[in-house]
Length: 101
Image (cartoon, rainbow, N blue to C red; front, side):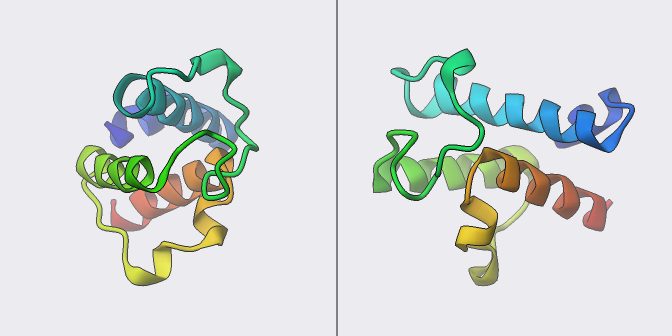
């Protein structure tokens, strides 16, 4: 799935924007049906509850990310630096994919 996002973009910012949209879609479709994709603020804190995710939803989201992008979050990856907001998470996922490609 991540390869498709990267393949369809022509510039790095395009890749990040596409990844953000993918993450929003995952949140709406798979985690929290009360969210509306176009209303999700990409700068809203993931860990501080601004997206309305409780701890169980957050664990489900991380598991979904690992499954969909074929990666494992190491202990050092589960930080505020990575999960500050959807933009920082998208940046992390794109870089992680490029590092393993």
